[in-house]
Image 1 (cartoon, one colour):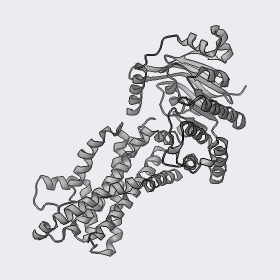
Image 2 (cartoon, chains in turn blue, purple; image 1 turned 180 degrees about the vertical axis):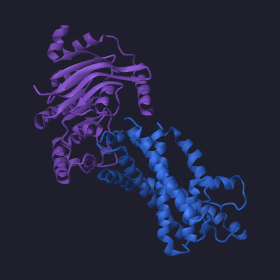
Image 3 (cartoon, one colour; image 1 turned 90 degrees about the vertical axis):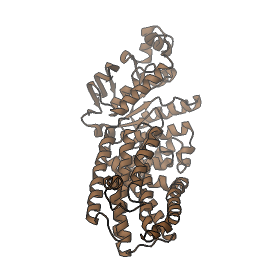
Image 4 (cartoon, chains in turn purple, yellow; image 1 turned 60 degrees about the horizontal axis):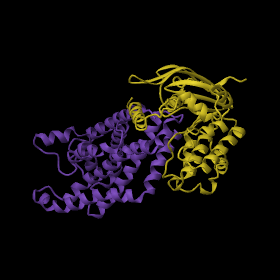
Length: 248
Length: 265
């Protein structure tokens, strides 16, 4: 247990010590919020869908968590190249404890990052419709963070070096984001996009968070919770299994 | 004569048909400084990896501090400290934080941990720099910190894989002085590899030379010199392992391939 804690603490220390990384990773979600929120806002309103910034904000918060979490998990590759990973691999600690500490650390960092973006959204005019449901929103943010960090951990355990970075970005992270209903509502009519959104685990995170903040769940709160919870647990197990196969 | 703390019996490691370690056997008595020498790609690092639970042997029997690394890796890991060939510190933490992290991972009780970290940082001369980030440290300072860290949990064995490679002669001397003082004060068994024969000659009580995955000679520096009629250990080493230079570009390539395979599994 203390091993899990100290590895969690390490991730937090590293996060708070690198302001550049912290501020740099805020840039992208804020850009999306401002450019899309105010650029597409009038069209969204004309279509009778209401306030776009209000709709978009939960999606942008999810985006911040997704990016920070996946890259927090992938940090394993850096640790391997810079050598620190070996120190943990020969320690008298189970691999599962190491994965758990790292994943919870990465998830906490992602959650903080999501919280900051949430505040930025509020500054841009977003306001939660049901402030009493904020704890539920936090729960969904946490589940998204754990699930995405576990994806990163799994990828980081398999990849040899950072050369696969573009691949992950373009074929995993961005598709997860774009087909998650973060930017647009789940299409009413059946089609490829709707299918993609429904198959995308992140959609259930966006839906849960949007429902908690704005009211109205597309898939239902129980479904969102069940899908996210199950996948977070499964991916954590997968990450742990892949990590356990690493030899220093 | 006490029972050996490291016992290796017919140890074999194969990677996809390539035999890196080929039926080696040796024993290291407790409290001894043991040098494990060999040319590039001879199987030194692979052997250390098996001794330290990182790689599973293909064949053979291993006993480290009374435990089998395959059957009881956690017990074995508690019994040794290791300084890897390349640094394994977290550059973005301070020296003290790196020590603390290690102490927690190895479950050194808090009070003992504090005292021990202080003492070891004094010992390696990094006490004044304990709150500095490791990324600001020189190569020699990092190496000293790693040695201090490896000793934090009071291991019975200290593995050092080329602890002095890439360091200047002054720093190398200093590191060996630390290690010798350590063996005296802490009574740890030291198992090290090096390419500097004069270091092995000066420091080691016992030496084993490995080449092409096999042990080609074992003994003290004096017996190895006598056996080969060499003037120095270096003469003996060359007499035993030949003059041929291990192809300069093949060796790193082989190592890379081996590492890739090791990583993949």
